[in-house]
Image 1: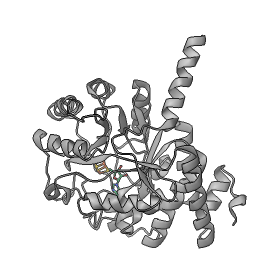
Image 2: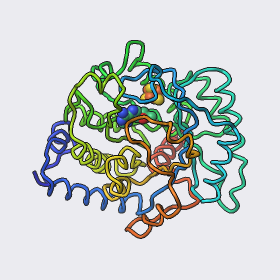
Image 3: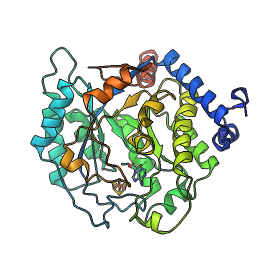
Image 4: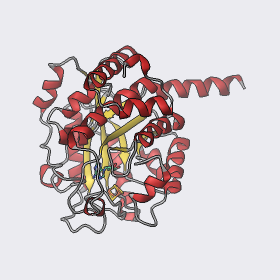
Amino acid sequence: MNLSDITLDREGLAAAIACEDAAFEAALREEAYRVKVATVGPEVYLRGLIEISNICAKNCLYCGIRRDIRCQRYELSEDEVLAAARVAAERRFGSVVIQGGERTDAAFIRKITRLLKAIKSIDTRDDPPLGITLSLGEQSREVYEEWFDAGAHRYLLRIESSNPDLYRKIHPAGHSYDRRLQALHDLKEIGYQAGTGAMIGMPFQTAEDMADDLLFYKKFDAPMVGMGPYNPHPETPLTLSGASFPSAERRFALGLKMIALLRLLMPDINIAAATALEVLDPRGREKGLLSGANVIMPNITPEEQMVKYNLYDRKTQLRDCPSSLDILSSQKIVIGYGRWGDSKHFHRRLSWIKSLSLTS
Ligand code: 5AD
Ligand code: SF4
């Protein structure tokens, strides 16, 4: 297959995803990098990742912190979260992501609200206040509103698979695809930059499913997408079922290829190079950036707890030290220090909506 053969419809995307020709894959990544630089520029934006807790009420069949897995649970204190956020401010990351298992108890919800207000008041000197992304699963619309009003402006909620049948296969009863879609629409309506994504290279997943995931992001008009390779966790039902899935090498190549294809399909959105890439290749995120991604999330969770946030096997990457970012700057990558790095797509859409309401 040649680059000129790609069409950005379901059939064309699925053919590009299924094609394992290394020369084709390399050409596609280069083209996506070129489109990224031409559209959103060479910068990579940083989001300091704070993994607030591995306690989760859900029981997703692929996840290493699912409710029924026996593992050591933790929850960061407010002081610990704030200390991490101050590190992000000092290192001029521009934004933080607060991610954790899904919890809907009132104490947790209020804690997040207090934290959002406190993070917003951290001194960032000449930079804007820290931007805040939340990734805390499905919540009621009221809770999303409370957090938005307290200062969160982006929310990541992966659809995991846009195919309702595959979604059902990788989740237990009681986890609803429609509920997840509703949550995504609530987030968008409230005014969040609502990001989504899916896992890549899962059991039962076809090239057409992955093509549909890309088309789902387009249809949802996602201003940001964070997708990454599936990595098995030894104790999850999905792994124990023995269902087959692509090799680590193939999942990595697929992860990069999905980033590249998405950059061609949605040139001006923010695309994250997920941590799951780094697990498969020590320079995974850098390769993601060179394939069209423009966001990374350096992990600033205190190390003692970080190792317990085991979504999948070998997620024991070390704390990102300043020198790991220096390595990036020695490549063709420019780090957008001290900036929110919101998606250009989101602001274009907003100004378009404003112009409609002005003229109507
Ligand atoms: N492999 C890759 N990603 C996973 N996640 C959970 N388990 C796995 C796994 N085994 C991802 C999900 C979820 C995010 C928090 O982690 O996509 O949205
Ligand atoms: Fe919980 Fe998310 Fe893991 Fe599902 S994927 S069990 S919601 S942390």
